[in-house]
Image (cartoon, rainbow, N blue to C red; front, side, top):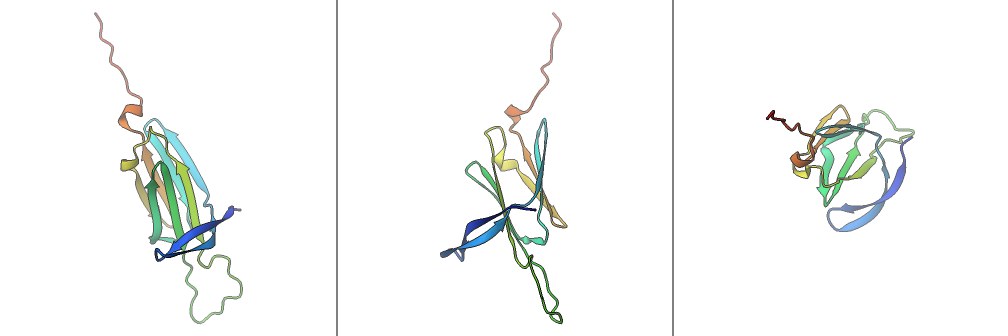
Length: 128
């Protein structure tokens, strides 16, 4: 089960309220050129998703929306409009300006490349 924390959220840039936030499940893969973060955000649309870099933190925030047909009565709802939030510290070896993101069917994929200087490179050897 995903962990839930209380999170202070700004509403309309004025007041702040405490809302429970769910830590989305993530998988992180690393290769020589960077890392790929895959986050599970069921019910989150592009319009309700915010991915940002604040200082050295990569922040993922999304709010799910589950449509309930008007001709039915909701008896029990745990996934009405949950707030997802997860953050990761990025080291200086990552290029914060080159992060790319895609969302498909509630799965967010982030590609965080390493800066060119931090990527492995082959050094040519000359024969004398």
